[in-house]
Length: 260
Image (cartoon, rainbow, N blue to C red):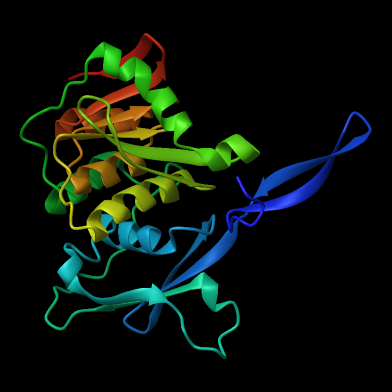
């Protein structure tokens, strides 16, 4: 991976008293503006910013279809400092304006899990058919994801997410310092390409599977989530109630299957 990659920065580090060339993951704020108003600041790894913005908008219920947006792009104002870290979005005339609400809660917010799931089902109802993945497919998915993470190979410091078919074939992969951002980049890339919704596909993540990852998958209509790490209780409950297959601690032939 080239040191000129915007997501990595060359750095001299010390190991056992000797200097070594290494790569550090870039973490920088991305300002997201919607219809001329500040919306959010996302701490992300630069690269695929428009995919990240699109994925954030659609999974947070601020857009439903690509036609809902009139424009999506980086700030072009030459007088704006750090304009490469600003993305501006304008919704199309007549596009639905969702009711104002807070963004999806994370694991540490302390809100009622039952209410969170009920609210989510108002805009993303349970799936009608559960996607089951073969054990052989599951066993291969962590390596499939790892092979699609060149920045991780160079730095060891990024989360990864990938969309795969039910047969385990790679469709899209993204990396980011934030696990939610990696997922948003994958989903946003597919949404912008008008490959939406994503029935019959699985989402693979290098991290744990928390509620926020599962809710993004459900909005996208992904049929299964495969996590290299652990699953939380709220993620388990959402998967069971939503008809979404959840596999955690996937390590070779060993994995946890979260069933009703």
